[in-house]
Amino acid sequence: MSLVLLVEDDLRLANLVKDYLDNNGFRTVIESNGQNVARRVKSYCPEIIILDVMLPGKDGLTVCKEIRPVYSGPILMLTARDSDMDQVLGLEFGADDYVIKPAEPRVLLARVRALLRRFQNAKDSLEDKIHYGSLQINTHTRMVMLNNEPVELSSHEYDLLLTLAKNEGKILSRDFLYNEIYSREYDGLDRTLDVRISQLRKKMGDTGNAPDKIKTVWGRGYLFVKDAW
Image 1 (tube, rainbow, N blue to C red):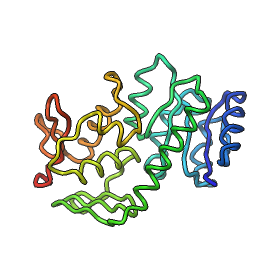
Image 2: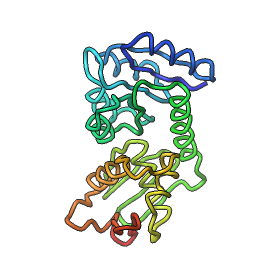
Image 3: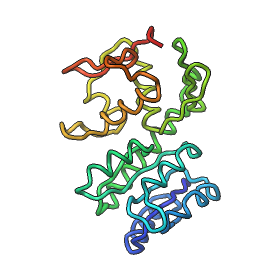
Image 4: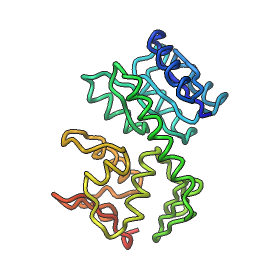
C-alpha cells in the first residue's frame, strides 16, 4: 500500500481527497502547514507527495525547492487555474506534474497512479546503467552522474533524460514525449516539456546558444546526441 503525503490546508478538500485515495488502495497522511512538510517527509518516507501551492507557514513552491534535494520520489503540485507562473515555477523547482484546482479526485488518482507507475517501471528496468562519455545513468537507483559528479533531477527530469538517452540518434516528437513521459496528449499549449528541457539542459551544462547534447530540431522535436557528452 503506497503512502501519500497530502499537503493541503483546505481540510474539507483534503479529507475528500484522502477518503478517495484511501478507498482506492492508498494510505494518505494530511499535513496542512508548509513549515512541517520536511519533517513529515523524513518521518513517513512517502511514495508520493501531493503539494498545494498556497499554504500557511511556508508556500508550496518554497517547500518543493527545499525538499527536492533530499526527496527522490514524485511530487505532484496543486495549482490555481489562472496561475501559469505557479505551474512553471513548480516544474522548475522540482515538481514532476501538476493538477489545476479544484482537483477532481478521479483526475488526481489517475495522475498519482501514472507517476508511481513510471517511477516504478524505471526502477524495475533490467538494464542497470547507460553510459555515454561523461554521462552515466543508473536505471536501478535512478542516479545520474556527469563528469563523476551526481546530478540532482526531479522524477520527470530523470524520465525525460532516460527516454532521450535510450533513443539516442532519433528525433523524438513532442507528441511522443508527452505520451511517454506524462501519459497524455500534447494539446499545443502545455509548456511542461519546454520547462523540463530547459531545466535538464541547465543541469547538464548544455546551455550555449546552440545546445549540442539535447538538440532542438525545429518543427520535429528533440534529439539526444551521444557523442556530445
